Each structure stands twice: as C-alpha cells, then as structure tokens.
Length: 282
Ligand code: PAF
Image 1 (tube, protein in one colour):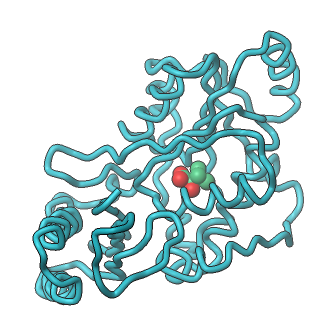
Image 2: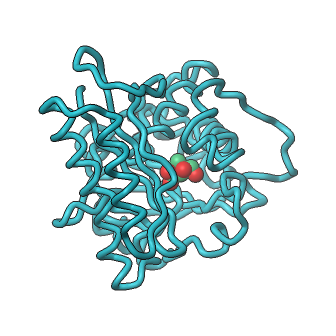
C-alpha cells in the first residue's frame, strides 16, 4: 500500500493506471475508520482494479470549530486497517494541498440543503461539495463509494456529479451497525460508556417508527411519541426526526406506502451529535 500526500506524487501513478486501462475505486473519508468504512473498501476491491482511500478532516464542512477540533484523528491505526483490508493507495493531503488559497466558491444545492443537515449545519454541504469536487478532480476515479448513513450527503453528491458532469459512478453501501443497532460512526469514539447506551435511542426510535408506520399508525402520533421519548431520556436532545423522500429530501407530514420513504434522525447524546436513517419503503 502506498501513502501519498500531494497531487505531484499522484499524477505519474494515475498516468500509468490510465495507460493500463485500470479502473479506480475511490473512498473519500475523514479518517477515524471503522467497519463501515472498511465495507466501502471491500466493495471497491471486489469490483474495481485499484482501490484508493483519502483521509482528510475537511475544515470547510464543519460549522462548529469545537466539532472540528474534537473530530477523532487516528491516522496510524487507519493506515494499518487499510493495509490489512487491501487498499492500494491512501491519499493524505494537507489543508494547503487541498486549499492553497481560501476559496470563495459556493455551491447552491437548492431545496436539498434547506432541510435537516443543511438547516442545522449551515454551510456544511458547501464544504462537502467543495472537497468532494476537488478530490474527484485530483484523483479522477471511475467509481466512488459512500455510506447510506449519510443519506443527505449521498443526495448532495449525486446532484454534484450530475451538475458538474463528473464521469464517474456513485455506489451507495448500506449502513453498518453494531450488534445492538447503533450505526457505526467515527463520532461514536467520543461517547462515554453511559452515553454509548443512551445512543441506542436513535436506532430504537427509527425501527419502532418503521414497524408502526407499516402497521398503520399515523406519522403524527409516531413523531410525537419519539419527541416524548427523547424529552424523557437523560442526556439526549432530539434535533430532528423526519419522514422524507430519500432522494429529493421532500419532507412529509403523513405516511403513504406508494413511494420511496425514509426516516432521518439527528440527536445529541451528551456533546456528541449523531445521525442515522432507515428506509421505510424502498
Ligand atoms: O462522509 C465523510 O466522511 C465526509 O463528508 C467526506 C465525504 C469524506 C467529505 O469530507
């Protein structure tokens, strides 16, 4: 496995991969890797000739400087896991490599960024769009792999790929969960032991809601019960619990079974903000 840090190192490697007509699978990450990331790596290894992972904690997508400062960084163990998983290349750029000058470029993802993560984390998707577009341009992958846990991010990136005519495909990989249902996330590393237990409320509410909607309960009742469950639970704060179309992110206040629907949730457990989602109708 080769680790590189600059575009200059990558260019000649890319040229020989291109000459041999080999296909590059790309997994952009912010490090602090877990099995969810390794699932993306495994998918790429199974279907592509070359698998490249990037590790970069992107400052432009954090709307809180504390969140940026506290984001877990575990480069040494990340590299060991990627080596064991069989990745061929790891790109670890510095901030000045990706942002040689402060950029004024702004994306507008329209309705997609007016709700949920876009609303509660202003500027977040602009930062994601910037870094992902830069990485796609630098690496020139044939396919990029993203986790379904970041459902709204997936919708934004698909829009970016279409609007900027990137000639790559996007593959979405199902959310990897711990045995008790908690969605794997780099942020879970920041949970104290009692918070790790409290964090189960997110998946419990999602799965109960799914069951109830599919057996005829009204969305308004389900939503009210989830809000009450969070108000009654210690050390948690619900930010949103929303029923929506998984691609357009149109939000609904009643449930029908005749179109794709997912529920997305964001909540604080202590100081740690977690997100999750569950498809209800595919
Ligand atoms: O999902 C993430 O880890 C990040 O948002 C991404 C796509 C690597 C961009 O920094």
